[in-house]
Image 1 (spheres, rainbow, N blue to C red):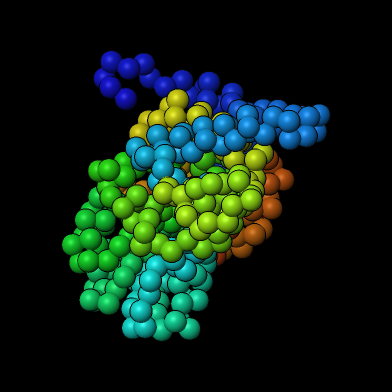
Image 2 (cartoon, rainbow, N blue to C red):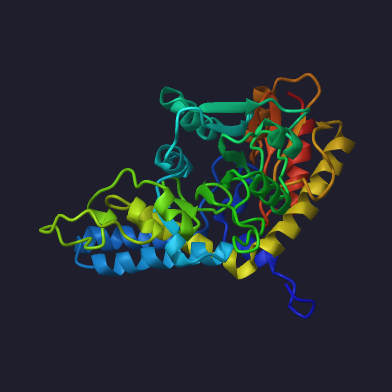
Length: 383
């Protein structure tokens, strides 16, 4: 946002989130509520499909391409570098199964990654590939630890942009540059940062990333995104291929395995039409505000949340430095079990999660001070 641009209207953003009428919703790092634009787009598709069958299929396909273009705008990518997939796990497996591994190769990753960013790499053991799981130094694995685990047989470093349990956010510019200098590729599990923090893949040349739409992107479950740098397409063997992977696409009478020259080659079969159309509508809402503005708003909000939680008696974990903070705040509430705290809060209309034995809140840019008030009151209520 330039100095002369009007300040974002976060109240207007809040009006696009119907969940805010009933709940203080602090669980976007788990499953986000749908935005009103996503709901409306999905309802329109449901009505169209119910009343007209596939008569308007070409219109639906055009909407899918709008989703692809919106995702590309979000990270300053070429739309040809974006694939529409069911979820983050599908994107991780594209890379894990698609690279031309040799016995003795290895992949380096933090040991505290979300399981979806561990199992696909561990599954390579039968091919002689070692998954080097680096244990955290404190609350998170440092870049120095990751680099120390690399050697001349490291093919890729797989890491989350933001740690799902503790909220540590990597400096991607530094991480990508340092890893590339050592030689490996970089796979980024972007699900906990995409949409609420800026990423320009031309400035920060991540090799691959994947993210589902049901968290910070405010879309439905089962609709996700995958990115590959275009020059790496031929290094990634297409898997899960089908009628939709080839250049001739809808010509079912001609069998010729000429893969599409874009990331769409990974979209082997039919789409989750409703989900991807809904995700596209939420992407457009986020693009109205921009990840830079949303990220700035979120860091201000989580700083206030950390201060108020400490004042109320919580033990907040992680650094207060804005460079490493995210939309996730993890804390403990005395000796009370996390699940008991979660139930009490939910009874009072406050939605949060338990992760790694701690309470986790994950607000979005539409949350306001009244939501924090409800959170603190729910925590302090007699159990």
